[in-house]
Image 1: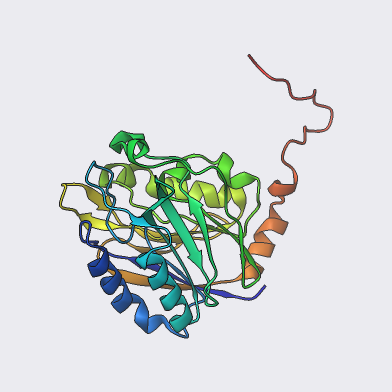
Image 2: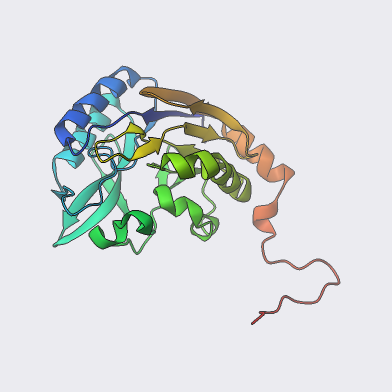
Amino acid sequence: MENLRLALVQTDLAWQAAAHNRELLTQLIRPLKGLADLIVLPEMFTSAFVTGSGALAEEHPGPTLVWMQQQAQELQAAITGSAAVTENGQRFNRLYFVTPDGVARYYDKRHLFRMLDEHKRYGAGQSKLLVEWQGWRILPLVCYDLRFPELYRQLQAHLLLVPSAFTHTTGQAHWEVLLRARAIENLAFVAAAAQGGLHDNGRRTWGHSMLIDPWGQVLSVQPEGAAVVLAALDPGQLKERRSQLPALNQRGEPAAGSPPFKDVC
């Protein structure tokens, strides 16, 4: 493993204006050629977080996936983020992970945000995605998935990705705490690219795109506004922390002399 050059992209997205948002993002990421190995976009980066009856979704494969393939090839970097798509008559909040060779893998958001009726408009994903990129084991999940730590513990990834659109209320209260907790529990880097701003339906998103190290320390944060956060992730830091605190190898082991664990009804 070598250093992984990471770019987190934050922007105030236009409401259900996919072409406009893709162009906006093109301008933001174009200068990253030669500077980033992995570019992380927010959740639903073509539309803002739309869950109502008029929510737009494009067929899979569609223009957003084509755009991501073009950007990955041009910038010679992997690019990831989620968009609303339909496949076989079912709508999904789908994260794509696209590499410069044009290969696209995807993960459909598993935990849908019921407080805004996301579950009424989208189908829940049934599987996880673990990506090997530049020697790093990368686990991408989406926004509300962040509140379900069991999704993260089984695969022991080096880097956890959390493209998001947290509300201003829950973001202010829980965003940093949850991200740091996932980093500490998994002794992994956590990279969260987020939507920000006030949208046409009155929903305000929190922003605060953030990078956290395996010790739970915040390395970078972009509170508000359109910006790109750049960082180089050091695998030596990952190895050091996992050696210093080998908790990942000790799950389920009772202390010496203690009785075995029992289920409590």
